[in-house]
Image (tube, rainbow, N blue to C red; front, side, top):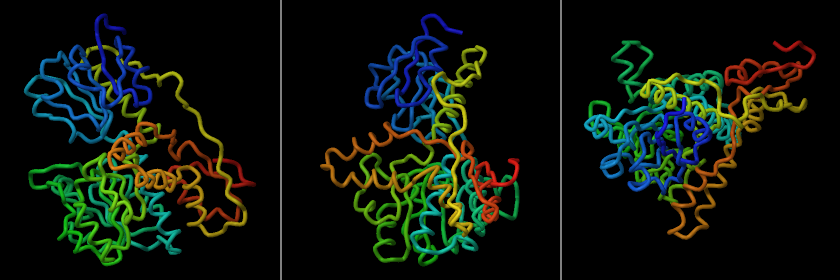
Length: 393
């Protein structure tokens, strides 16, 4: 498949990208800060992550003909410029949706454990019910929560009564955001949760944001947490990344460095999706095999101690074993120990050097017969389940 003379610039912090795109030609792998006008000038294809702003300033005078972003969001891409220049574009919608949904599951279960309360029967408002939000809704269902769904574009498209006005979701115990960042139009999301919106949220409720930082207004959220209007917040995304507001970080329940979608599976999915789009652009056949050197099998099983009997506690133990969200929170909070001038680099380092995280589907949870009430919830979350004394399904 190798195309003589073809040059591809990629972000070296993306798993599998070098191995995959080397099928086309010469791959030049750079760190985020090294992707600039000089390094992309002679590239035919450019593959980036969300940290790289792609537009005239980067591409003017280059020979780039195809831009791919291994992300679900496109707010870092000047799509109008690409269209004007006739540059093909591809993103990876839905590639990390399972990873984000699992992050939300971990956040909800951690909150309930800290508060010594059950999630069952509590309401979960899902704002944006696309690739990610629809899977987050399944998480809420698995945890026995009452779902409130909001998605104006889908509501107009389908006419389905299950989609509610945003004001109705302000009654929810938890509100979780899964929308793109847009600044214009009927459904603009920039500061969608500003002072007035947050004030309408149910007192003692919790806000989760894994979409884009600027969907939530920093000052408004800080005020709501300081005044105890909100009981907590879970933030994976921040305004002005990587220069995040560390005062806000001290006030949130859980804070992480924009890694909700960073499972290895999600990253490889994104690379595959962009690669297939590039194959179409180049009119070359796609090789669907996974990149060499990356794990494809299942991981060791998770054995739940026989002493545990509460179904929600069992589910939390399985989720925490598969993905420890508190570890990511701990790493990010160390940013306060850095000098102000070092904090942005530290935030980016946490993302670039993120550990290998696999999705729940690669784990089998081992239960005793007395714990089998947890089986349905675990399977809905994506785990395989085996009950001792029974044949595996």
